[in-house]
Image 1 (cartoon, rainbow, N blue to C red):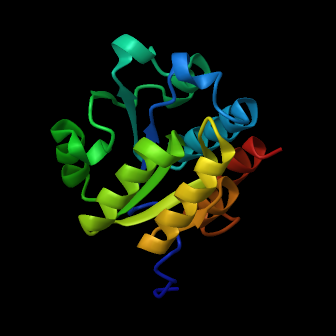
Image 2 (cartoon, helix red, strand yellow):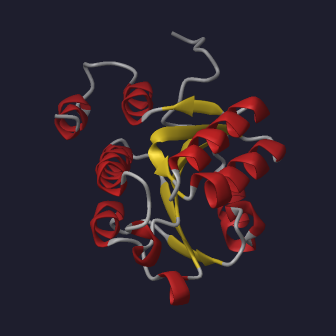
Length: 186
């Protein structure tokens, strides 16, 4: 099939951005345990399917490193320190995104209403298609997450979920990676 709906996540077009899932803020996030599980599934699925992953850390000296389970999941994916709320405000990240030659930015992490939202809005402004993974983003207050998702969608982002992204990336069940990805979802 040559023509697919433009909002379908494409493995060869996507870059997964894991925003600021850091130790000192993590325990305060609403639904942190479920969020950690979903993020792990999404990151592992991306790596199985050869979708590049970039991890950011907001001021790690103060907020600590990425939580251990996600550090394990991302493997050797780059981890970029930043001080800007928007990942695109950081020149190292912005350069890496441009050089990736990917047109879709799939965003997950915390906090939905700050760094995730600003990253999504700036990526839209720069001409990228943005997919925000609703069950893989979080905030300390659930209402902030809801408002951020609504704002991002109104601005033109696609609001999606972990399973949809993974199945979009796979496209079909007769690929060698299907069973491995499916195993993550059980």
